[in-house]
Length: 206
Image (cartoon, rainbow, N blue to C red; front, side, top):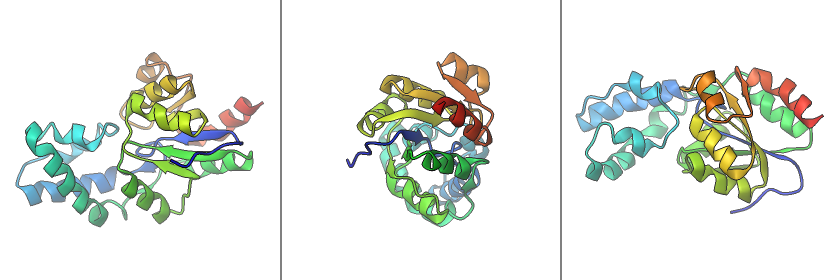
């Protein structure tokens, strides 16, 4: 794993932190449901984004079929999920604010890394590094390896990852977890969304 060093590194989660992937994931699950012949409530799925795909599929399939279903879903993902995805409000500016201060940006996500990279490249949002397939406390390994002192995410799992890594936890209330839940999980600060990031960042840097 190539690491970032020297400058202050800020990590970001992907789904519902940097990118609104809900329309694309919903479309993919609708196509996937038809493809495998199993009714799936795509609206329910996108209301609880954050954990790995295998966790979601375990709600709809027996445990022994989940690996097979992960593979099939991912085969459909590129066809349905990339085009409808857009940046979350303030996402581009948040990454720009870090870079303007001489910092570096890192994306650590539960999404599989190839699709995370495709999303970011498609939208012209190029962080300094991307690490996929990590969830909750598991994100701490990548945050530590890259020397991230701040981690920004929308889920209590992101808060746990930041705290495990000893990073400052910035939560945004743009995902499935409300402000009170993010605070209770131990977030150091909770922002309404990333449009508030630049002002917080400038104060944090002093």
